[in-house]
Length: 314
Image 1 (cartoon, rainbow, N blue to C red):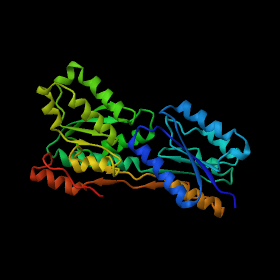
Image 2: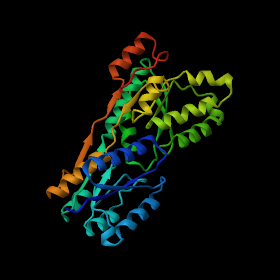
Image 3: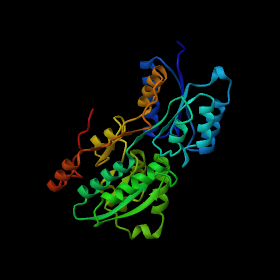
Image 4: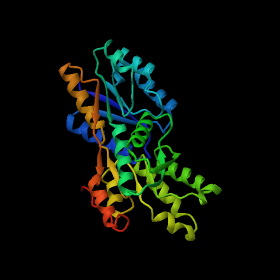
């Protein structure tokens, strides 16, 4: 039997979640006995589209059996998807709404499906974390992902649904990286209005962006630094070497565990190709608050939420 070969296209190599996605894919490939090639789009949708077309339009012998990709922009590349299935290449979309998949599945025998974290639920958990950390209300600086990202949009929608009315939210945008959030927060802090703004909590849609915000606060004059560094910081992803580590050390007050899904994509693809059975059109992965909302609220009631770090899973 021919050894299966898959292409994994990720948004960048600068984000802890994307690096974990790459690692999960490589481990799964070894376990499943398949080949995997990983490419990064440097947060550029045009680059990603060109990379994908290069593999699709290559010689038949060099084409992958399927493509797994997480969109770098706001599009799920429907035209590229059609070109892939026309070349008998399976197509898997990660962490993005792709409404063309159902129609595409009706016209092909190759596997076509999506896997995503439940991003609206991620946002709802964040809103509940804000409520637990600010039981009397307050003001949150919320660092969102790119405006054209469906994941960012859904997380924001969920957060606004779940947060109580006594919490006001101000927003900044960054590109899912520590550097991007650091740049956005540093620019905001140079504004005169920032000196008059009271912020009680910084929440980010990604752990690395939360750390980028902390880095920006750490660089301001010492007379102002202490006020900013005392407030809670929260993020998302909760990966063992980054978010969970920052939670244990106290750099983060809370995070949300969002497991990588490239390994699930490879497992589902391998099973589908070997069995000839099309997988379900969409698989959702449920996120988990770290610590739990109840534990977070109980700690705030005791008055030590900012004094002692939480433990996290190993």
